[in-house]
Image (cartoon, rainbow, N blue to C red):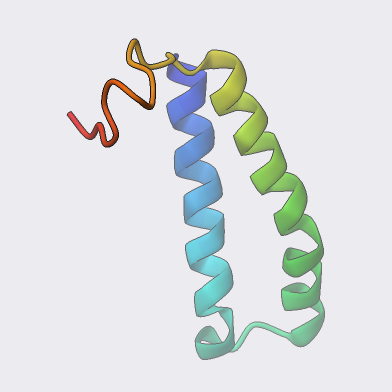
Length: 68
């Protein structure tokens, strides 16, 4: 479980930094590199969530929306 939250935090931080790069003055080749890496990071994050995440005990018909 701990690995899941670390991965989510790092990928979210990467996405936030990526969106701020044009305003920070990062060179274009770094932005392009981050753009090319981002789908793999998101895919890895999805894999970690699906592998280590805890599934809900309810079905879609029982409970449409669950946030608590």
